[in-house]
Length: 377
Image 1 (cartoon, one colour):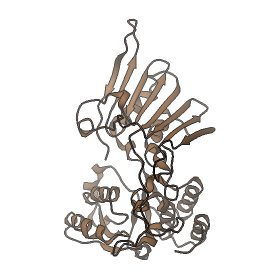
Image 2 (cartoon, helix red, strand yellow; image 1 turned 60 degrees about the vertical axis):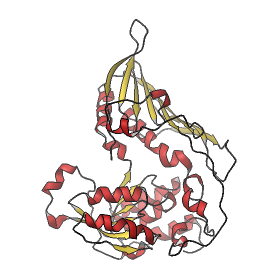
Image 3 (tube, one colour; image 1 turned 90 degrees about the horizontal axis):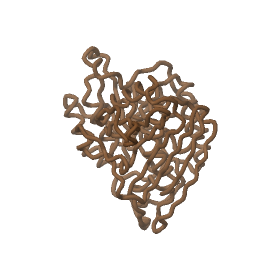
Image 4 (cartoon, rainbow, N blue to C red; image 1 turned 120 degrees about the vertical axis):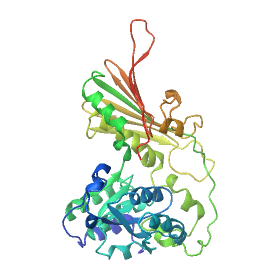
């Protein structure tokens, strides 16, 4: 990697056109798989094979209409521990391996690329994939910052590529039902939507700089971020460091905000106000642990509230994700509250379902309608 800063790096990348035209539709309805001819299989590559990347790889490999031909990760241990499991799902055929995913981009047989790196790589990897003629499924967030995101959109349009961002909650049937319910006017006029992201995420110490583990390509991991010696904290806790990400609103709250905008039927806000701070300062974390945001639309007002100092707030556990039960909404960490003139809907992520509340003459709140959820991916 060169010493150029992030913006110069991306400008250099977008100035060269390597791509071809055309597009592929990724993540089609699973019911279409059986009708897909064998010779229409998509050749896939994945960049970033730990954690979420492994989950995505397993999901794609379970389909009969695609096959992984490349695994790209800066840690060779990820290939050693992940690729065999994928090969077992595709007739024993092992994907190739590259620490530097640019090697994979030279392979014209690759149709599409799954990107599951930390956010500081998302835009640049997307741009390079588009320029190399590959379609992209990129994990959220789309980019490290707004400027980068716009460059990614420009590249996708210029190269005529299909790029999909991983906001998988929109796939959940219970959320489609909620959308239909709201569109039919059953909540009345909506003036206020409240979005929550409340967790218990403590601070952490900064490790000493050191040599990277054997075989680990730290320069490639760091990529377009400011140069820094290898540090275990930077590698593991990037979500809360500005050099790599934008904190928990950027990484996780994006899901609830996306759900809220989609359900409410609004497009872009005409104004946004946000203020955040880190009150648990005993450690190396940089991004806010407390944040309030207000999105003003022509039709309604939307608020976003984040706190990471509330360990009693709970994500949906597996009993809720996979069973017929609802969370205790006041302690649900990732809920959306939609206030209509006739009724209020509370919606949860990760299979939490939704319930609609009204107040009859008895003044005791009651549930008018509801639907259990299932985890969408």
